[in-house]
Amino acid sequence: MAFLEIEGLAFTYEDLVMRFDLAVEAGECVGVIGPSGAGKSTLLALIGGFETPIAGSIRVDGRDITALPPAERPVTSLFQDFNLFPHLSVADNVGLGRDPGLRLDADDRAQVAWALGEVGLAGFEARLPGQLSGGERQRVALARSLIRNRPLLLLDEPFAALGPALRAEMLELVDRLRRAQGMTVLLVTHDPNEAARIAARTAFVSAGRVAMFGRTPDVLGSSEPVVRDYLGN
Image 1 (cartoon, helix red, strand yellow):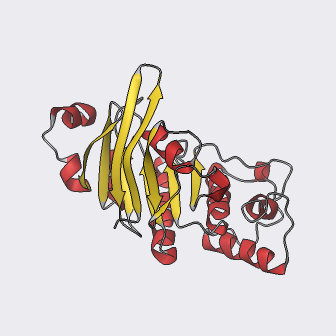
Image 2: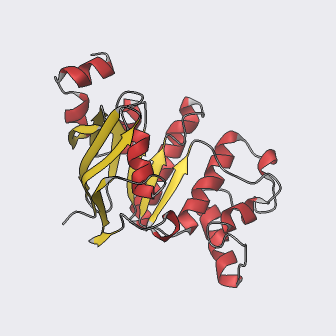
Image 3: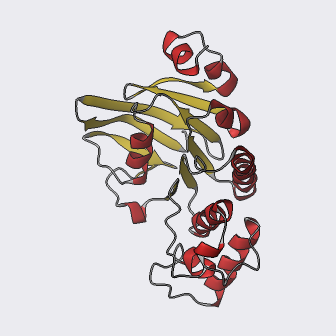
């Protein structure tokens, strides 16, 4: 049994009927690539509970989570928008991942400090988001994801607005944290090089379907016309 099992997950957007099937093993990083509008972000939104399917199922570690609200799913999502509150300190922005009302005890505060240390921001607790660089703000968002202690992390192009060097740095950080924490990661990206860097397997999404799924080098080197056209091979 795979850790994440998606079977016949259907969703309709305008005139496109999407239907996803995917099985992801525990602790692995899977890249999700494909043309714009193919359904990559919709797939992650369905797993996260931000969209409602019309059919099919989502199971995590054997548990059916299809009907659960987002807050009750063993899932955390990280988007390109940092979603930081400008009037709250770095520590409080991270602490929201522990309790939305910031009712934090000593253990919670210790977890905030731990998460900031993990992303290289120890000592930044009192700063405001406006005092940080783009890469530092994304690290705060990642720390907030860590402190939620959910086994499945969904990344929807979270580093797209960063420069190449910072993107590479953040990918390496995610990969290190994944290995250290045993998280399972799905990474949506428009850059195949990002999938090649940290994803052992990659799903190619086209027209609302997982058209190909396998080892990342095999997918990126595929002779299938839809993949070749997307990659420009």
